[in-house]
Each structure stands twice: as C-alpha cells, then as structure tokens.
Length: 84
Image (cartoon, rainbow, N blue to C red; front, top):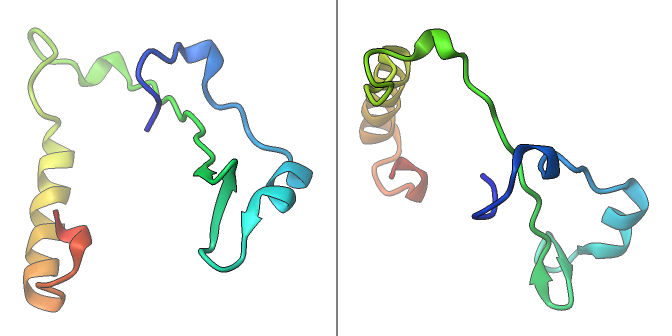
C-alpha cells in the first residue's frame, strides 16, 4: 500500500479536495497528474500482540478471512480478477 522506502512519518498524507478535483480524469475515473496515476502511501502499523515467535507466522484471522473469500469467489465469481 505504500511506495518502497516510504517511512511512517511520510505516509498517510492525504490529497486536498482541490487537488483531487484538478487531478480527476472523468473518462478513466482515476486521479492522474502528468498522465500518471497519483500515488499516495498508506502505512499501517499492526499490533505487536499479533506477533508469535519471530513474528513471521501468518495471523490466524487473516488466514480464515482469505479462505472465506477464496471460497466465496470460487462459488459466486470464478472469473473475477479480485479473487487473486
């Protein structure tokens, strides 16, 4: 969700409404500047309480959520690109 090398203090910088209005391309329904999509960095901190051992184990809640969504897409929308 953030550009490589972004530090936490430089992330979560929101665009102003005026900047978004100028950058909005109605045809493509995107926010662009100079012909390129505007990139914003969103940095999320996760609770240390979720760390197990070395902190590299997958979070059980996320594993369950992924399994649920995989099954939902397989059943309802097998060709939807978001299933990946």
